Length: 113
Length: 299
Image (cartoon, rainbow over all chains, first blue to last red):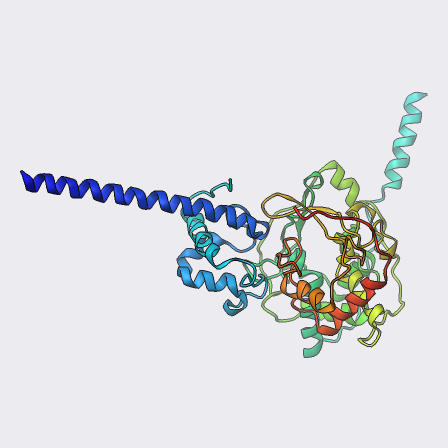
């Protein structure tokens, strides 16, 4: 009986932990959407990432760190047509933007609030 | 009586709105050396690329102009690769020359925004040399972005103006040592004044400095997310570029970030191809054109 209760408690813990993760990810994606607009990314890439260059496949091609490096210095990825954001985007804003870029490929765009 | 009167007016309007012009039957000789093609590639990127270059395919297959005001309708920049059906593969060198110098296409249409009446013969030679070269960016591709679908206002706006008569006058490009003249030449032929003057409706392609609000900004365009964006005031007024150093200006032009660490947004592109001398020439030219009081708020 005790074992069953223990197992049940572990399962409830696992679900709520996974639920928390999803909430946190959703928060990060929404924050990323706001930053994506704030830093002018939408002016070239559009809200859904299908403007100049297709961002919807970006997460398949690059790791998170590679995406950050790309945004900071696109010329190192052979893209001379995008500005270098290394002096423009604050370091702490990079990861939420990456979350949003990855999200673009997985579902419809999140409208910045 | 009234119907005769109306018919007469209608006939006058139709005759006045001439829609077909003389093209050229000439043939010309184009220098197609490596240097010509390399320079042509550079000039084409800056002059034609903003409209005709497709980032996805890395070719000059054109695309939909997302930056034009919605009121004009849908405008598609043509495929200018060597494809003989979708592209300009059937254009002769002379017909390309004629199009850019007079605005008249191979099939006799006037295309006002193609007009570059002041372009130097050497640059035009090199552009044509590049378009006819083996470069991968201009090799035949049948990518088709569809046709323009202009609104009534768009049709009226874009049929405004007339072709410039064909001329045998040779136009020389100003040298680097002639900074202000070179700057004037670049602002004209790279089309800076098209976007950075008051509006597309009041441009003077033959005498750009006579365009309304020349380089004073405020022209309404759209970004890729559909937002309205106003072009910047590039005159050296307090509301414009006063206080910009040459270094800051060059960095803005070539790196796409202004001196306030803000991104320069679409439809403005990064002009990575500009040399130091060209940046300086544009800067010196802008410094001496009439400064316009026009504060353009960044949206």
